[in-house]
Image 1 (tube, rainbow over the protein chains, first blue to last red):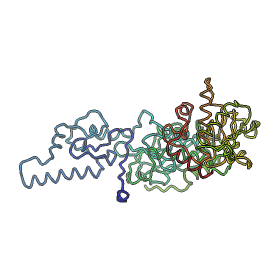
Image 2: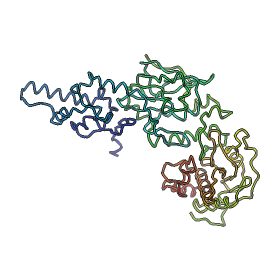
Image 3: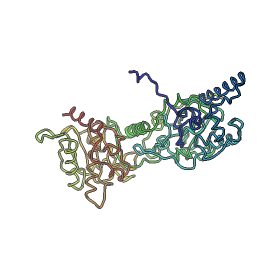
Image 4: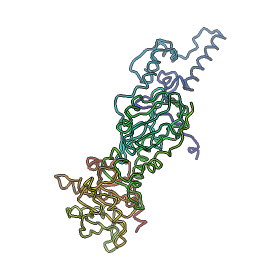
Length: 314
Length: 180
């Protein structure tokens, strides 16, 4: 019973980063602890706490004038090693600090943060559930949007393979403007195919920092490569850990996708009075275009969300 | 999972069109031996032309299931087997399809072909038992090696043993007790 009351802390799983230890742990300044803010150190409460502790020690040192360096021994060792925080996190192989750990003023830090927007060249590894691809280390919203927590705490989002195949090649995707605020489970993009419309919901709360510059000209990329080139936007999350609790990850996302495939099969098949489960085969790339009697509105209502006014705040 | 031969059959195995009778017999034997379902093999019926999709040159698995499910006589479960290729609207082909916790299922031997007949019979037995697992209400399983795992391709099907994981086996026994 006591175990039930303990709320399990959910730390974000950062895509493509094997190391999950806090940089202060890696430096040996604090006990081993997992990163809780996707290596967004400048916005991390724990980082601020550690920094504040150093400042307190510094003030005490100045007040009492003991002549002993107030910094922890391990921090002094770290300062001697000069390992950059991006080296400690595993993002880069080798880089020494040249700015006294003042990351806010560091041009190298700025460069690394900027390149976080660049998509990874290699395609993500995918598992398969009932013929649909499920990218590994991605989080999934139950209305078929994915969220990929990236280094630095930003989150890339897009449509999953299920939505991409169900809607087929799109003619247009309307995305919010930079700086707009999006909220979890509220519309973030309008998808267009001919006269048909659908809305994609945002998997997390946050502010739009970047949109896919190529998706406007090549909207079918969302269908062809939903987990790679077909990404929609990058968000600066505001409630990341809370939002992630509402998303599916790992095995549960595979089981959920399998369930969704069963639901779709049943919906598109003639009424048999039962859910249907199929074995084997490849999912067609354009379900709406291939199935003659497929009803767009019914598909959208059942698996995405009803079309409604966007609720974004500038 | 012992079977009393004098009891009423649980499952009707119905060949639809021309196909290897030995494959059907092997499938029936496995349903009885692995699942413990009393299985009766029916005489061969004609190809289900009502379910043929000329555009895809395949048979619509859902239509065959619907037709089998309307049959009120015989065993409570019906499993159709045919040689021709099957598909459903969202999949380019299927090895089989089943009503989850329902009455009817269908499997195709079309894509199970190999020059090694032993392999074909093993595949047929696996697909048959897998689909009947769905009839008993089991969904796809994520345990490696469990027969209820979804197989996208034959390589994946061949890697599976003709056996269930502990959780699926427990569910099968529980549901068989319920229908006995």
